[in-house]
Image (cartoon, rainbow, N blue to C red; front, side, top):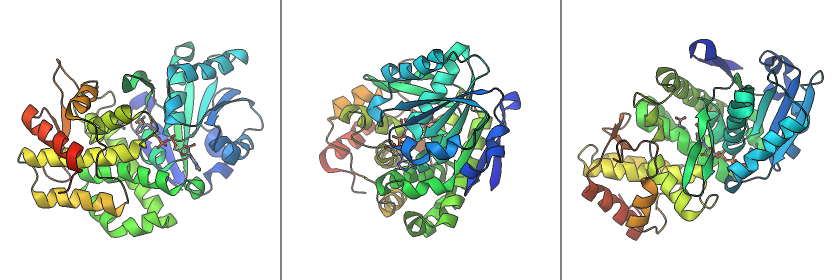
Length: 363
Ligand code: NAD
Ligand code: GLY
């Protein structure tokens, strides 16, 4: 097992990464204060891993909340089920919520923990690659609104993150690939040596070689923890860099209807669109864009956006948390491994969107 730390003063917490962590009660016990525990999971993950998790909690008063599975249920209506379960069981302020699932369960559980009685503890046990490398770390929590992705939420750091790499054994291939998009993101925004490592080891990752996956998770979590420690609340345009491809990607997710494109797939295509726009702004050359495309194709991720019109794209992109004073700002690349937040000239943005909408990006 390896343990990383997210350094945030009194809100600091460990990220444990390794095989077999769901057989180690002491890791969980170290982060549980009270007796009352609500495990939130979904209808796919609970049958696979709930019993194992419950076996780690013999001396606690445990309730469960099983949500329906899907991004389309990541909304206020379904969040209410978590509050109902907490209240039905008369859980008080020293209860702990445990998220057992992917990013959807993690984001919803964290938001419920932020809001229940104005804040209770929570622990992340992420079960998708995407959640293990990104969403379980850093404390962004929330739900979608039909008019905007992740638009309602709170910052709420977990008390611990337990990453058992064994659970990836049951993850469908498409979900594994979606997680790789967020892994590749770290290489593109701030870690060129990691990008090179990914280019060399992508076949091993797709083949689920445990040593390669563990290394990718560790290096991703190191990057994420460093960025979160430097700019927890996304006020310094540092944490925003983690959103490479997300403004385009969120427009794809919202435009296509939640759940149609996986989040990681939309981010993958969005990262190539961001690279294309960076090239139009003179910040990348065509070989760089081709390299971005190549690693995404290597990871078997989509690189052609769906046929959403330019105006529809722009409409969805306007609902973005990086908009300042009405101006859209995007995460762009000033060279590979060096992301910046910047506005983009409207004409160039439209060119990227138009090429995407007509042809798919062919750089
Ligand atoms: P997800 O939670 O929908 O999980 C994907 C699918 O895999 C689901 O069907 C789930 O039931 C299933 N699954 C999960 N673990 C499994 C396992 N071990 N075996 C078999 N099936 C399993 O999707 P995701 O990709 O994990 O997360 C996407 C969500 O995360 C989006 O809502 C996105 O907005 C959010 N996100 C949040 C952050 C953040 O910082 N908070 C960062 C990135 C993404
Ligand atoms: N996934 C983006 C962030 O955590 O800031």
